[in-house]
Amino acid sequence: MLALLPILLMTAQAAAPAGDAAPQGRAQVFIAPSGEPFRVYGEVPYPVADWFSGADKNADGKLDFAEFNADFLRFFDTLDVNHDGAIDSIEKTRYEGEVAPETLGGSWTGARAPDSNKEWASKFGDDVDLPSVDRPKRSKATIPIGAARFDLLGLPEPVAAMDLELRGRISRTAASEAAHLRFNQLDTAHRGYLTLDTLPATPVEGRRRR
Image 1: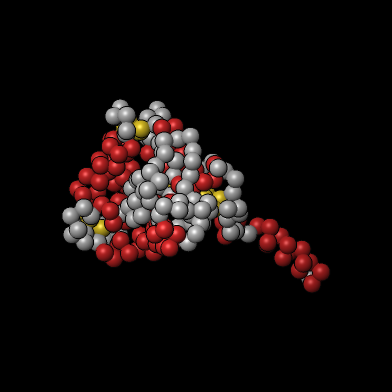
Image 2: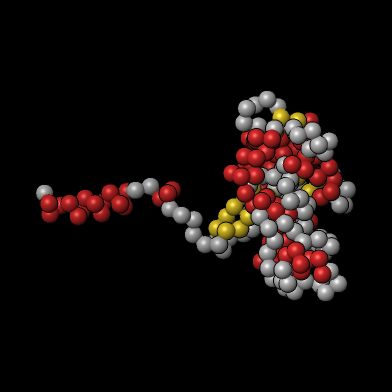
């Protein structure tokens, strides 16, 4: 019996579930316009396509506002833990601390900051990096912080930004209004739909491509 023990242990290890294994490779993060984080690991495509394909329910390669809004409110409902139709301060804190801790992060380091803006260097250090990519470029007037490093619209905290009236609670109606505003900001050609290839690159995506 003792002689069989090593074999039994090896068999048990081989049968252990692989779900507990730590992700391998460098993390890549994308934060959707709703604030939902998407994370992948290793040398795989940037996860903006994961969000787009999930929201594009009819899989026609075009994300219209109805699909965009439905995806937006689906994530809103996951944050509304007590199901009272609003995201309160406790639920917002949970979002920032557990769901998307990237919203609390700082900037990164890279290429030297412009000499004309000493405030950047004093706040973020001598080295900052902004991307130069083929997709439509975002303004170089700001340094991305928080979720703005990983999103399409430069929002450091996309859930808190839905509270346009500063009420401390974000209703489902307010979330839908934010979805409409963000859709229009992305639909720069005013076609009534978005396509993956016309979306701007997030700062981290552009930095990776460089």
